[in-house]
Amino acid sequence: MPIHDYNEVDILYTLMSYVNVSSPQDMYYSIAHTILTHIDQIPSISINDLADLCYTSPATISRFCKDMNCKSFVNFKNEIAIALEIARNEIHLSPSDNQNVLENPEYLKKKCIKKRLNL
Image (cartoon, rainbow, N blue to C red; front, side, top):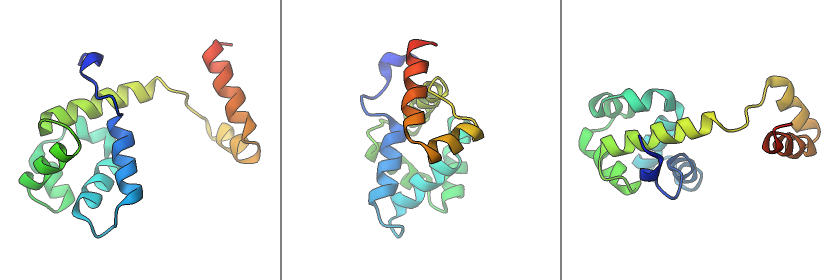
């Protein structure tokens, strides 16, 4: 999976944005929400299994993928796999870090700067 094939806009961001601005009654909302809920399974799931998980048809999943600016379901899965790989390289917070961020949002900024400077 070469990074140069990666969409300019992160597919995970696109999915989260869709969920945040759409109505829960929208079928694509349901698909996006289900994908985000089962995100680790998506790179290896079949279109039929995802359709079953979303209570819809493979054709609807295919149209959804095209609506997400992917040429096909296979391309969509590749985009997800790339996005997950990139996300794994981002900053990870432990439960204690999460608590520190809740208590002091500046903590996250400091942690990001430390990570960036490799301190």
